[in-house]
Image (tube, rainbow, N blue to C red; front, side):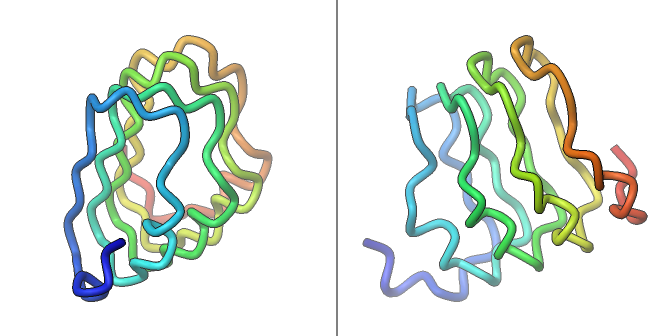
Length: 104
C-alpha cells in the first residue's frame, strides 16, 4: 500500500523478478518516471494507460514481455519508452504513431 505517495513522481522497481505490475502503481497518476526494467512481466495491465503524466517508461530486460497495452497511445506525454532486450515482444500496439512526443 502506498497511501502517502499519491504525489510520487519517480518510481523504480527494477530487477525484482515481479510477474505482474503492482496494481497500486496505476493509481499514482502524478508519476513521470517509471522504471520496471528487469522484471518478468508477460504483459502490462491496461491500467498503466491511466498514468497520463508519464514521460519515461523503462521496460528494458523484461525478457518475458509479449505485448503492450492497446491503449498505450493515451500516454501523450511519453517521451521515452525503453524496450531493449524484450526479445518476446513481437509487435507494438497499432496506435503507437499517436505518441507524437516520443523521442526514444
